[in-house]
Amino acid sequence: MREVDLRYPTCPLRNVLARISDKWSLIVLWNLGLNEKMRYKELMLSIPDISHKMLTNTLKHLEEDHLVKREAYAEIPPRVEYSLTKTGKSLIPTIEQMIDWAQTNFEEVVK
Image 1 (cartoon, rainbow, N blue to C red):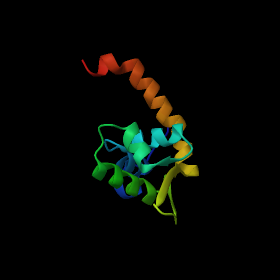
Image 2 (image 1 turned 180 degrees about the horizontal axis):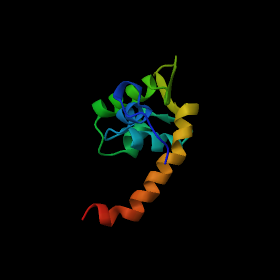
Image 3 (image 1 turned 60 degrees about the vertical axis):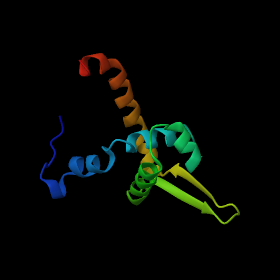
């Protein structure tokens, strides 16, 4: 197993997990990974139990962390599309492994 410096300011694991381990980030990333680009409403429909405020905040944080790209078009009505950045795309295989693990171990974990 790889050795990691676990002291907070320099620990990559703690810093990255702090950014993506909230309730919605992985779900938003996964949905964007399934689709090349999505509009806000499409994301809302793909995650029916997320509130507008939480989706907006999650997208903002993921954009700040360079995992999601927001592209606004100067049209009427305005159009905004979200997609994964190269870094965001590189996270999809890991999320897929987590989903596989969760499906395999769900019954044991929720006992």
